[in-house]
Image (cartoon, rainbow, N blue to C red; front, top):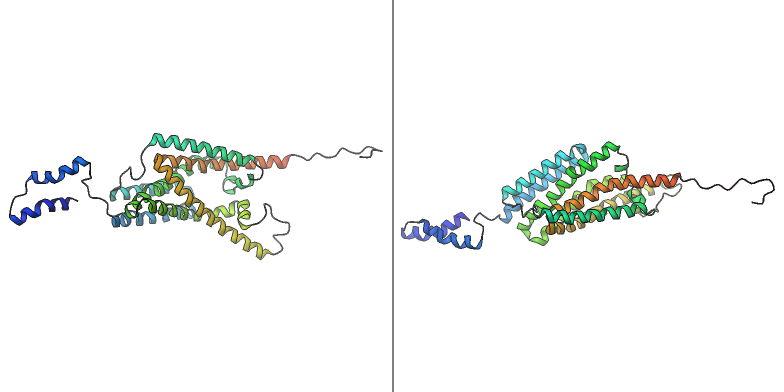
Amino acid sequence: MTDSLLGRVAAPRLETGARVMPADLLSVLAPRLETGARLTPALKTDSAFARVVVPGVGVLVAANVLNNRVARRLAPLTSAVAAGTLVALARRAGLTWQEMGFTDPTRGAKIGGVLAAAVAVVYTAGVLTPRTRPLFLDERALRLSRARLAEEVLVQVPLGTVLLEEVAFRGVLPAALRRVCGPVASVAGASALFGLWHVLPSLDMASANPSLGRLASGEAGSARPGAGSVGSEAGSARQGAGAVRVVAGSVAATGLAGVAFHELRRRGGLLAPALLHLATNTLGYVAGRAARRLARAGAAVPIAAPPARRSGALF
């Protein structure tokens, strides 16, 4: 931008040998100052892709593998470093805080708080309904001790999951992609990447939630007697197909959720989708524990035995 301004002012004068005066530069800059136009160079589309999107995706791939396969307990540290790196890339490339969604905290808190309360209501209804209760019995939550459960809810989910995912998929990536391909395609691209981000977690979900796996493979709510011994190859094939469906369904569902989250980000900044995201994940752990307690209570209720027959009694 600076080179083009100097060229517009200096080139004609250099040709005639005239001196370039400060007033000449002001004559070009004044209209831009009056209209509020930016004086700094605009971020070029090829620069946005090369300087933000490409390295940003690389950072996310590394963080995904570390958080899901290599060092899961260190996810808060890994995610914080990755989120900071993405923001640094974006700022260095010229993206503003507003473009990345760091705006409207008050409005975002209101919107996100209302939606978080709605999540709590839906989870409560699901846990209290016997038909849907098994879907909450996820071994990833049920096998945790109380201390580890508190760590997941208070540290791992907020810092290890929500922070990075919101900064990356609702903040930096859509802002950079918007410079490259416009608003609609940027949301679609960032949401697709958000769906793919969940491939590794959904593989764990398929094995940790048997009810969900059976539902995806087309089996009944409970295993049939002898299904494991007769036709084991067919059973394994069904389990494999069920895992594929769980992964595909998770990718599709989270991709669509990414579109909805981005609309929340547009209305209330990053805080609105972050609060909904936080409630969805943390309350899921609580719902899983509550579902197990209710399931055990239901199983422990003794069936009333018929009264003992007295001598000569008909019944």
